[in-house]
Length: 323
Image (cartoon, rainbow, N blue to C red; front, side, top):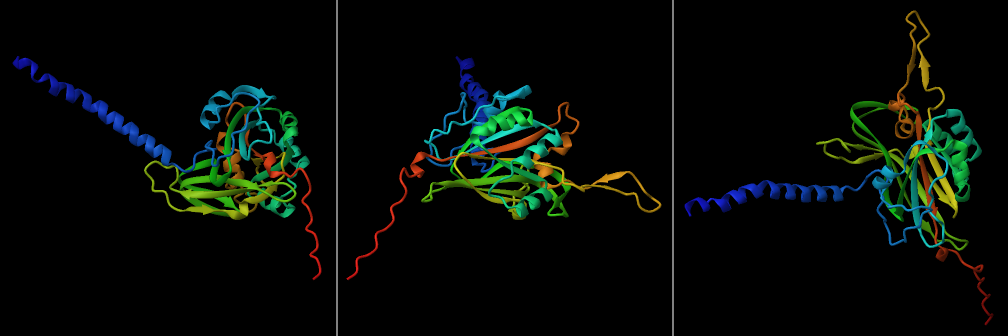
């Protein structure tokens, strides 16, 4: 009888690690849910109905990433169905074979109608290229680009707060060219952010989209304290997209970014200048040794419901009767 008394104490001691593990799991889940910016967040930010896709999709970026990659480029991709029932923004992440000539030709043929030439030049100086095509022409656009090795999809809905499309983590110190000047950024994350929402108009609604690169000091660095975000508005842009229009964004290496020390008695080999924001975010210069060189593409697809379009033209108000 005396030998059986310690048994409950032993059981309690054995269950303590289990309880500790459960508490750690609960705390970890709470910390994960508290994160405001994740890469291509798939959470719906409004009550807008999630659109149907041409093939089953979880609507979760992480799950779609695991199921939408291929060893050979895909020419047929899944797209949201524009059935006039949803308001919001769908985002797709592609990985295109990095053929500079093919990509440059495509962007020259498809300039964004709502972005001025001056802003396009400013974007190019920061390493970004932007194109615009019709949703119905997106499969042909992918064909022209040679297909994609990934088709990662996410539904943002009415993204009234900033969502992170992609990021580049910095540990230590890193030199970056921003608006033609070299800046040193320390311990943090360079982010490409987006927000956008439907704007009802008398002639039919449009989708306003803002793209903003920014630096989050301490962001995504384990143990670092996150501080205020530093935006780079001159490297971003704003555009109003008509229903059925699609925006494509990728990175580029600006002309003249490679310099050579050929003057003076101590001439040396060509020296690469620091990368631009667009190069870091959407060309992955540190992955040049990959077996298949790929260029990340961000595809932004706004959807506008039929409720935001009038079947008939608005009636003109009648003149007031004279007294």
